[in-house]
Length: 404
Image (cartoon, rainbow, N blue to C red):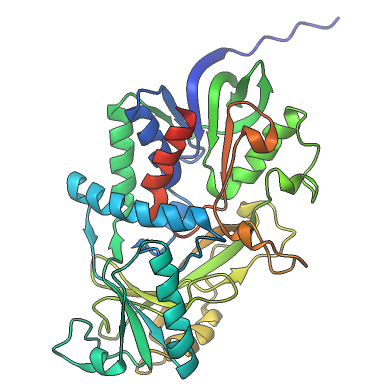
């Protein structure tokens, strides 16, 4: 005899946000300030423990992004930078507007690469960049003095800075909670489906009926959204045909090394020109304590990997060889043996070099709305890599406008 199954206990919420990294927290903050009932669901035991805490903590100026190809990155980075500096001042979050030098290491980079970046920046509304010479950088009386840098020329970005990302996320959470938001840690979204214009999530065995679900789950966003769409009979599988509606995420690992046993060489951030493989090059970042770290590099994960937990997060000390070569192009006095493996992070990418045809527009952030996939109330944020931290408050405000 079959026994009737016990119905799941159901709860109702206006807006559930899956993921409490810097993006989920920024969205929760913005919506709660508008009076929305917000529930933040985080599978980890603490906020921001994955991508949000494994990056360079840089406040980017908005230099690199072609607004015709990556309009979201262009817009959100510039807006987010201004919002972030003001937010840090208002909420007493540690930060430093230390500036950055983007250095050319040969004549072609100086004559072509640097002016191109300046034009990109102007197109994004960033007009404070300045082309500087090697003589300027070597002049102790100049405002760009960096005696340890070797280059053929550089672009100076005075509005680039660094921020304590953990303090930032704690502040965002506190503000969201002040406005009525609730956070549930150690809560895993097991599945979801669309029903009667709602999205119903199953979380640790209980159902939550949501008017809106915003997936801000970083490395897991595509998997969570695809499962919801599959259960909603909107997407039959993860394949090329369906990538037109919600693109798949790939993974690129970035490794960091920390400088030890040598005097800290720089007073500001030092960046080479962007890496055509998908990163900003092995750059030098100073943190708020004054120590120097280098990275990230670009280590593409095989395109067959769909679970980020299958990725080894340890940094291979053997990768230091390529770091020494890259860093010595702009700091030749780096001593052998002084780079020590530190930590790594994973970038969620919407493209992969193994693919035959790469759509450059997929190098932008992607915000999938019901217009893309047909599920009412479901919004999915994909490919939120750099400059995600800088863009976070702007993305939060944008999502609040969409939901409102």
